Amino acid sequence: MKKLQFKVSISAPASKVYDMMLGLSSKSTYEQWTALFNPTSTYEGNWEKGSKILFIGVDEKGEKGGLVSKIVDNRTDQFVSIQHYGLFKADKEITEGPDVEKWANGFENYSFEESNGTTLLIVDLDTTEDFINFMNDTYPKALEKLKEICEE
Image 1 (cartoon, rainbow, N blue to C red):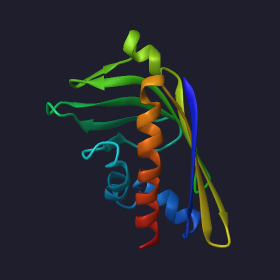
Image 2: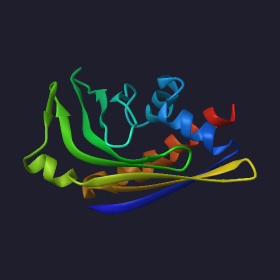
Image 3: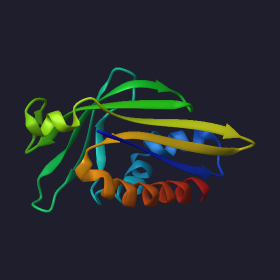
């Protein structure tokens, strides 16, 4: 696993960034910024600490797939920690095997630091070697989209 970090400064309070990033008031705000990873990106489940959540989308063959994850921590407007522990393929949760082992125990952490009405969002994530270029290319664009919708 490789560790990557991305940051974006958003002219909005942490409460708004947190709400729109997670899609709490409207799931569509989550889907707008994550569409840069997959146009059909969404989630099933909730953001409560200890909850299972599926991050899913439809692939080019029309099959639903994604990650099986757990919300390790969620401190409102401050911090969210997600642990990925499985893959979702062909309507099945796969939590063991060589494909899963590459991703197992990978974390995605979001820190929200507000100062004078501006929020610095810091994303720390673990990724596999074969996804580094994709993440380095896509994450900044996704965070710019999140910034745009939060500042509207």
